[in-house]
Length: 154
Length: 107
Image (tube, rainbow over the protein chains, first blue to last red):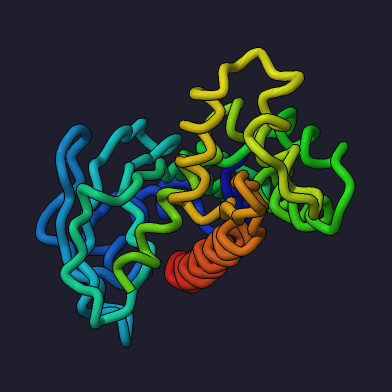
């Protein structure tokens, strides 16, 4: 998968436990640090307030996409480009949205969680980046950094 | 400040087009180019190139500089650098959240 953030974490807990921590809105709220108004329902907007210290002014708003039991939980959310208090409230409808996916896989030791965040897809993909690389100048290195960043692979 | 926030979205959008990317690729050497130079060797019309340059200019990726009677366009790496910093920030937030999830389910 190109131009996305990908994180893989091994969790020493059964898939069912991780699933609950992700999809029960109270449990999600605890580790994510958000106070959600109600349960996650596919196709519906989830609302709440961030509880992370220093970010309490930030509103949580996401649209739940998929809930495939113990396999995939996904939502889209707008990306406020700033979390600075003085810039709130932010009009989320003006912000670009990204897709967040949590995939679960059973492993010998527990659960492999793969998180991806994609839809920064206006970012240049591999082939387009080739065009930059062929060009001379100090910019090449910087673009390579971005490419490394956005095409992280397992 | 609000303008700065919007910049990321503009940069994402400006780069999300093959023609504009190829223009940026041409411009990202240090030399500024005129619209005529950019039109040469391109299938696009002068008007089309001008339109794309305008989008890049609004996003701050290129700046026009006047030399004599002609405008030349110059690449500015800063908006894309800020975009990378932003992605770094998002990534860091996920690292922290996932580490909290880890403690949460493993305890």
